[in-house]
Length: 135
Image (cartoon, rainbow, N blue to C red; front, side, top):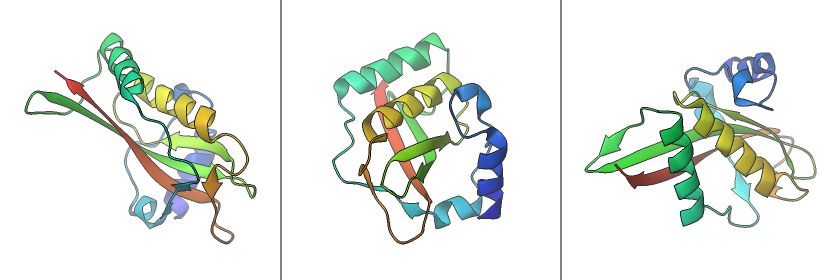
């Protein structure tokens, strides 16, 4: 747990993708509880199309399988006591622009009070957002 939290502190949280320093997942990342949103986080066709445009403009090299691009962005979320996402720290995917889009998306839709169900004193949670589009 200390590895990921230290990386988060050193990265300066995640106001912009340029601040991201997490290069690989610590085994402690998977010990974080999965974040549960009170309302379903919207990932619609328009979000996938935007993610596709962002990744293509940035010339990102993402994994493909059977004619589809699969982009998964794992994130650690700092959640305030009132259930608001205060920091989003993505794991390095090799596509900073896509990571920045995920930060903006999560901040927009989960940056208000009561967005995430907290359990006990836990402050950090994990989640992942997956996009896909044809090659």
